Length: 557
Image (cartoon, rainbow, N blue to C red; front, side, top):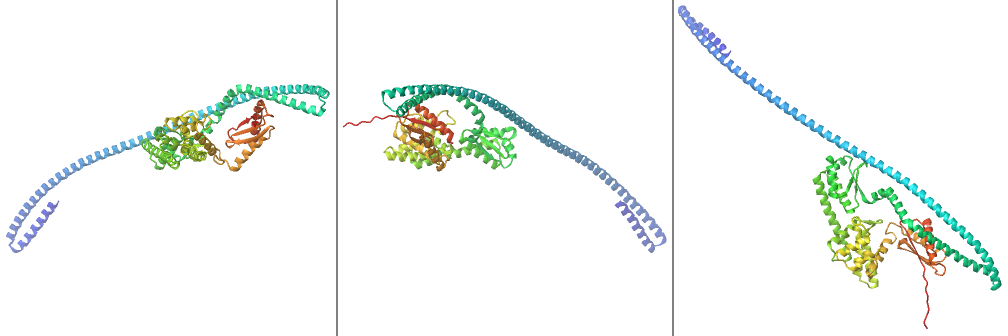
């Protein structure tokens, strides 16, 4: 188009030039010039037109080429856009499928939890059925016991009838004796009657004591079996609550969502935690709390601290669980060792086996009737040393015996048997002196005392454990209970003096030997125990010991 315009402009320019020239030259020349100019202009215009056509053709070819390239580029871009769109669709599809799989896993986990809950409810229902069955058995047992008691009552009534019959015979004998005595002895009726009554009272008391002892022996043949059955029934009914109070720790959670994180995918976190700590982790419907259960107080403490740290940190997975548990275990082991070394340093005791130190430190996590065992043995060591110093015994050895007398309590949850005998075996294993071993074995009367230092340790143990306030009892209540026990015992005829010892866990009663026989002593102990059961409230049991002795004294002059 530009060339055409140029050509037109050229033609116009030529015409203008011709016009100007024609004004100066002649008409002929003018015509000739105009003709030439026209021819030249026409030729130039033809050239320009041809040139313009060629350029237009080239431009057209270029335009067609550019159009083709543009189309190809468009097609390529369209294909790329389609591929990109397909990739995005595939990615979105994979993401949705992953979300679907995750939802399915959550649904599966929820179904498993529901199944576990159903199993728990089934077990609970089964437990309740068993308890109901046990209660039925208990009722049957009580019925049998009532029947046996009725039989015993019948025996007692029979015994009373025999006593009445004997009383009647005694009355007849008394009448006869009165007549004979009046004739022979010259005694008054009142004096003779008093003498006979005294004799018959003694005979009746002896008969009653013998009968009681016989019944008691018969009852003892069956009491062990019945007691075992009662204990088994009681354990089935009450063991769960008792164990829960002494073997569990509760960890508070910030929210209930944390329970799912503790359990982990398919339960891998909770399995890793239980495997690493050796405890049972109970996750139930209790809001914002989980329960740690174990008989081992050290393991339970490690698990409690580790779980609290994991919850605070928020990163809960098997590797992290193992790392935190191992770190807490090292800290607790060091704390146990530090506690033992601190006590040993305070008491001035050295040359202690490292394993024995660990067992001593573990007592920090044990309690006995609310009294911390480590503090108890430290107190016993001090008291034993003081007693030994007063009587001239080995003060250092007495302290050592007092410190290690309860060492068996560190492993009673792992080893079966009495903590006194277990402790003696441990001390013997680690090369402790004989006095220390004997103190552990004999401080509860399960072995004989062989050294004065072991006696000092046992005495100090009684003072520490039985002193008022050591085991959550006020001084006023303690004194009232002791006075009550002594007054009950002294209220019976024939009792000279009663002493409540071992913080009221035993009552020793001195009787007049000329008024109480050996058979009557057993009956008197039974009567006192029954009265104490009726009038005094106390934990555990109280041992009643009746002591009857005679002494013959003479002087050589």
